[in-house]
Amino acid sequence: MKNSLTDIPGILVGHWTSLDAGTGCTVVLCPQGAVAGVDVRGGAPATRETDLLDPTCTVQKVHAILLGGGSAFGLAAADGVMHWLEAHGYGFDTGVARVPIVSAACLFDLPLGRADVRPGPEEGYAACEAASDTASAEGNVGAGTGAAVGKLLGFGQATKGGLGSASRHLGGGLVVAALTAVNAVGDVIDPATGHILAGARKPVTGGFVDSESFLQSLTGQTIQDLASSRSNTTLAVVATNARLTKAQARRVAMMAHDGLARAIRPSHHPFDGDIVFVLATGEVEGDVGVLGATAAGVLADAVVRAVRAARSLHGIPAAQDLTA
Image 1 (cartoon, helix red, strand yellow):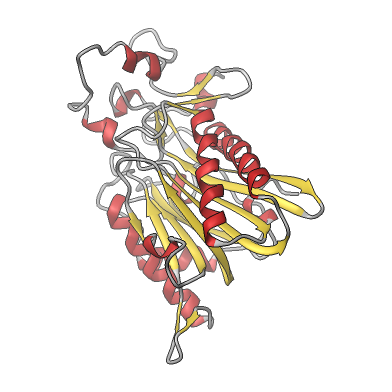
Image 2 (cartoon, helix red, strand yellow):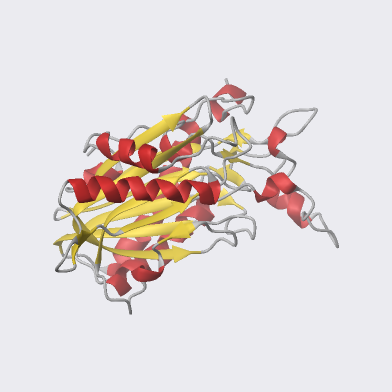
């Protein structure tokens, strides 16, 4: 076990990263196809090809999930993933051509680094070229490069977010894993202790504000005028080697969101675009309830790992620097 999404056989992960621009993209490849589901909880999503994951839609499997920075601009990176899959002969057979099915979601990282540099087709293709079944890099990489958390007091008081991954073996060959790019409006909490690991920082005295308590103190007020609080979205991919239908995959995605709620406070805010995809490769039997409950725990672990692996970038300090 690598404690990574790539612990699922047939799943490959690759990244394109620009530290200078403060952005990147991450591709999760399942070239042979995997049953997929999605659950969107945040109020500000940027997505592509998520409607076809509805259980009532015809296509049953996807060939990749693209997570990117660059806000809605970054969705263009999915074109590069499609080109890579087509070049290698993967896709849904329509009878006249194979059409790769690539779902995508992007987070808002434009305030960090350069707002005019975003992942596009070439960057999506490059992420595919770099994909492998080794343990995924974490922290300032791929879709997590420009991520930050705790932005209620402004972007300048945020803490660096990042990319994290985790996995669990349930016995009988059954595995559940998660990968997430953490870019939340709220704070990241250690579920085991309740302590804030990364979040909104106090301007003068240092330490963390506790964003949830701050929100609750705004009696009769709103945070509509805090533009930087709208620069969010936590993206996640949960994968398992269990056999699932599209409806079951969606149920696992719904349950997996509990992992975000355990590790991010507040979560699913109107200024977040939180999205969880689920991929099922169909090798072994697994109970949906057990899978969903496990996915929530694994996703919470991945969130914590993301901020612990992050490094300070473009003036936004990382948790490890604040506690050193």
